[in-house]
Image (cartoon, rainbow, N blue to C red; front, side, top):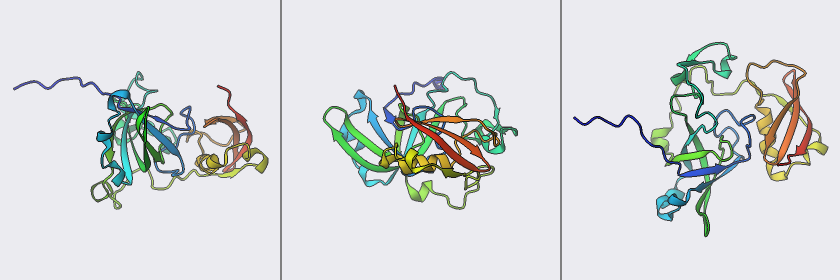
Length: 234
């Protein structure tokens, strides 16, 4: 009997462009903020329009991708999920931690539309993505409701509602610095409380990158107050 190969080469088929330039602030799961937009651009080798024929008839997609910022990090059999305050250990395969034997992520996104570019081939526009800008995409599959949706499923410690939502306070003068098309996305991201789950109220000032902006805020008594928004200079 032929021995199976012990190693398999994973090919990057595309990369996604999003408004997240750093990990801090990315939603904890896909689909939480449906207004978020992303653009999937295929690598040159995979820009054949025939490869996406029929994809436009689906409303949602599964994206398989690489935690490209964690590829060289060591993996342990247990981790401390943020939802448990960073204190209780859970088996890595009972979590969606990026620190895994194979750094593969899975996201369900809404297919917005597909554009055919003369230079870049097919470009897939999606909404609700929870990926860092430039994340390598290793596969795209259609979401099929009758098999992929399980409304009666239980989810252990990962409750269906995020219990750490905060009230967001931001002055109109500060908010108007943000492009109107991105204001709702930003407000919803902030309402999810981007801080690590184990952080308590403090006087710390946090800074988050989103699109072309650098947002500074403080959190106290379940209220997040934006203190400053600046255009980020690259």
